Length: 291
Image 1: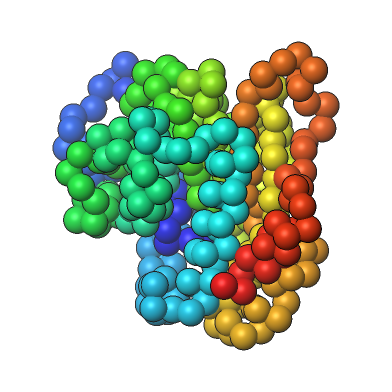
Image 2: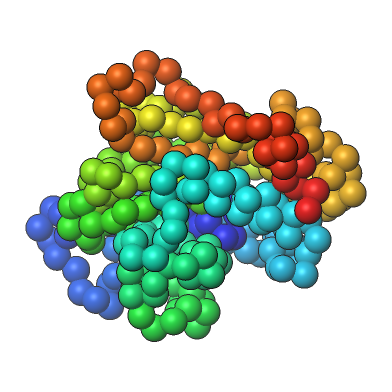
């Protein structure tokens, strides 16, 4: 669970016909009747994390955090380009669990247009910070991922960074995934970055493995890239991180690009592994965290 990918979860009150005010949505104060226990647990987990995680871990001036960010960015950009999702100009983009807006800001650097970019997060204070960082044209809402306030088939790209590993309730994971698919255009793609292993030192997260990702997005092609070796190690000991990063089996996160098959022959029976096209690209992938 990272500060950059804070969880956006459930606000089902509107869907149940109870309605909500703009102030309620701004404060992120409406719990879901179905998921209230899990939602409260997540809010408490983030509050505890904010108090206990070293402040210098999540900053561009942290060498370890920079190593992680660069490796994620390389993998995501490579996937977007390879599977026809680039450039970002003209595309409508949503990030689920946008936190303070770090990745939304990167999307703008990559060419996205502010008026076509949206982000949601469960935590209203993170949305307030994002508003200070981002142009006013970017749409930001404090609300839940399982009840997105967007029409069907609204977005070309839907991103999530370490949202699902922070959700321990399986039904909530399924509902959040269903909402992402609902607002995605038929020709659109989901970009996923998350833990694929459990963290024994952090009971508030649970890794999401290949089979579960495939089950969350049935009938989709899922292209995987495994990266980032033990994020806490990177932040605490960047030199050791560089030494161990090339060992793929030790990597703890997936970047996945999730698409709808374009032909019947592409309908998946197994998840697809994202493999480099040539040795040069393989070298880049293997040493992504060494930049």
